Length: 258
Image 1 (cartoon, rainbow, N blue to C red):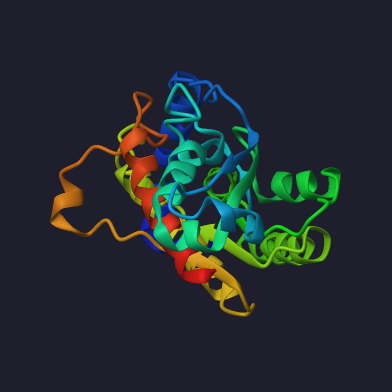
Image 2: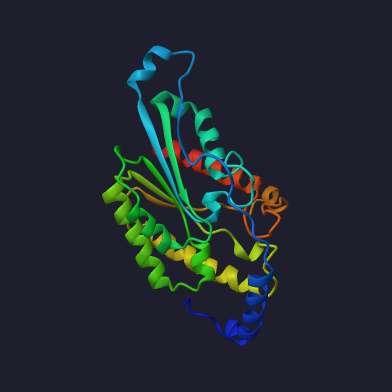
């Protein structure tokens, strides 16, 4: 478990009561519907004859409910769909690649251990993955996974991603600010915010030890962002605006990496 401060220990009975109540009353939203793999053409009208000489950009998304698109109805509104749309519009991507091959492997409720297990089960790809995006951590936090276990499983995910899938770049979006989730009552939300910070610090520390592995932080301190609602009707998962924000950040990051 994550070490707690004295003030958190004193409120343990309150946290327990609120956590159990939240587990019973929380709204359960389904995963977004739609395709979870595909191939898109990035051909441009200006230079169609050169398209066959360009490479294929291979992107793989792995993770939990936020990767699966819980909070919106379709994959087009979810992270995968919005990321693909953003990438297709970037000149840097069009200039270097003729096609974009993508796959999504995500399940609501999955922890880092579940993501690791999924990587073991999935067949090795015919071609190496250029960009692997791994979205885990929220369920590890709610399940009280220790920071040492969290670190171990992150390292195993990175190792297996490189070894089996040939991942050239691995991106771990940092955990969202759980203290801002409307579904989590006070003071439980403050505890979850504290634990999220600890998990993110460990994630950044782990990623810094590897080449081509990035912990992607999203700054919500901007006043223009603070006034926006980024949560779905359950008050826990991202809505389309949140997925769009993350997709934009990821698209720009991917463009820079390649």
